[in-house]
Image (cartoon, rainbow, N blue to C red; front, side):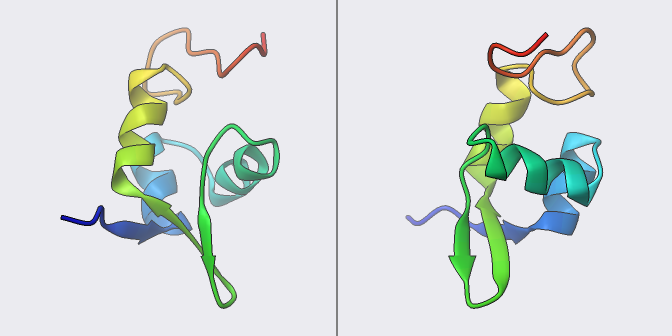
Amino acid sequence: MADSLIGLKIAAQRLGVSEFTVRRRVKEGLVRSVRLGRRLLISESEVDRVIREGCAPAVAGAQCGNRP
């Protein structure tokens, strides 16, 4: 079964960050995304991965990748 794709607004809400932050993390290569026309979409499993790896502020003391 294919993973569902969600928009930036929903992804940002689930991660507890702004849409701008999600866009920046995509640009930095920290969050994988796909582009469908003008829309930037993120798979639900990618959002889960980001949360699991502690890249979302919902996780206390979160650090993303090698960044302090």
